[in-house]
Length: 277
Image (cartoon, rainbow, N blue to C red; front, side):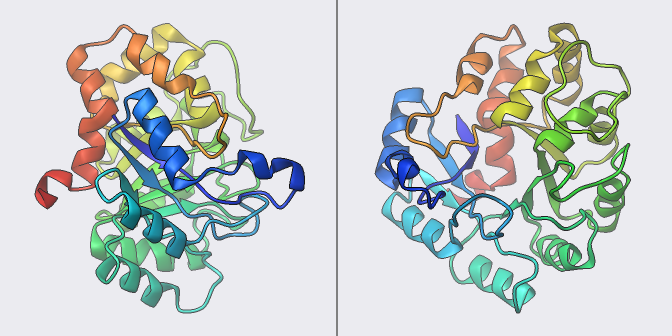
């Protein structure tokens, strides 16, 4: 398996939370226990993302400790200086293989985000983005996401978060949260995955896991339609965190070929692992 979504480091300044900080060694040990081959390190450099920071430099340093197990992305706050130049530097000089996690209070199609999308388009990079009502926000039907998919066809947008996964259902009203019960067909996520080659979805964290388990009958058809666009992830960031996505992926009744793509094949293709040897 390739985990497309992890964070490490001191992600809270509260003293009571320091015992949960995740080190590179602890991450790799947990990967060994769960049968995870590689993990993607996603920096968090925006103040709204969490109560601490995980810098791109720290992701690169951790990657260099375990180069066979960890992959570093570049993750910058779009309001920082020289964003385009910094992306180029981290990709070209430090070997970062994607951008993320994009998680801040700007609208999804904010012009400052488009600087990031343009450089990722130029480098043909995956972008992991978080969306909910207050972070990288969009409207009903995800029209901003659809515009960006069309404008930047060589950037691969990898969606995650309550605001993204709630739109799996056509009755999504942008109120966020973790909707329960049957999925109403023709939701924006389902439609956009089918219409745009450069959209993928990460079934991670509480939102992705909820989307995959709230309506098992719908999920079977969803996987049948989009198994080449779905990415395994955990959003692992605390030492004692539960990872229900691991058990679900191993037990859900689907075609074994689809399971392999969701667990590893799709991620390996986006990350160009086979090309890297």
